[in-house]
Length: 128
Image (tube, rainbow, N blue to C red; front, side, top):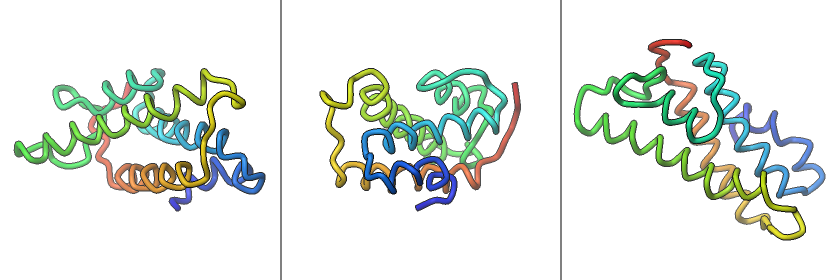
């Protein structure tokens, strides 16, 4: 597990509170992107603006080929998907009505750890 992620969810993991661990895990991505870009946006809008292929704040490669542009776009879709599938339900639904299994939480933590490793190597090309 990526250390940034563990810092965000350690307490919830000790309590086996997977619902809130998932919510905090997703927040770790937004907080990291906000710190890197100084953007005040959140969620999908933050991701789309920060990692745009037209006027990006952050790039995960040089954006010098169609494959690199596709990779950047894919990263945006991956992070946006995490927002729609995990952050939004845990932020807007009561815990008693939206179950998060241990297995789903662990799988998400793996994906978010991957995203943090990508952000470890990101190039900051502009800040707000």
